Image 1 (spheres, rainbow, N blue to C red):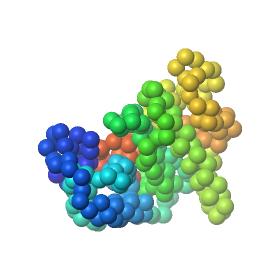
Image 2: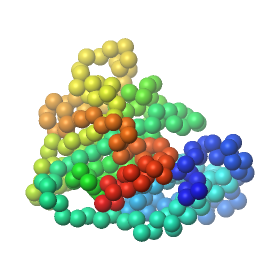
Image 3: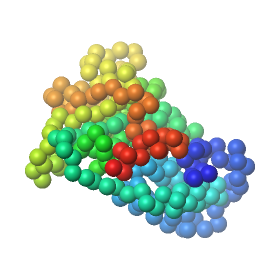
Image 4: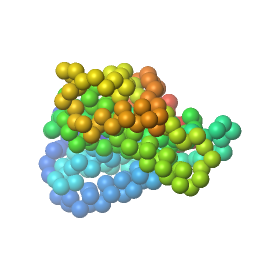
Length: 250
């Protein structure tokens, strides 16, 4: 068990493993440990983004089961202490490439989905920006959840393009290419016709269409098996972490 929380959803720990769900006596210790994990995740460890996102949701009233899961996470970090971001010179022209994904209604408490994305300047990585976070609203379908995640990815891409142009990067940063594994979300980003399934979606998410029409971003399909952002929206398996290790760390 390299990392318990990676292989089992945190909400099923108590049921499947019969872990004590009593309140943690020292909540400060839990908050300090999660804060350390957040620092590692933000700086150098995109592979633990989902785990840290889940554990961070219980800072107010942590349970013993979450503390045990957190210790498994630190054991995983100790076993992979040699994992580090490695940026190398690339022979190909640099361009902004992103991966966007969502896990629909993954939270059993409020049924909100998880957004995950990562961006790199070449096809082989490593990423220069990544995020995993719970969506602010409840999505009524997987297509809507993916569309909301895509909106966040487009926002990040616009920021990165502006940042890279500001430092005079000699690379093809615009338009940014974002890979998405949901055909419905891709069609929704290009089709301006409202219908029964999409007319309820908040207007603020439809700015994707404007950016696509203006040529600021390109949305391309990516099979779910090759979706790198998948490790940031759901518990990844060892096989998936090994598969995407080259991209995640370079």
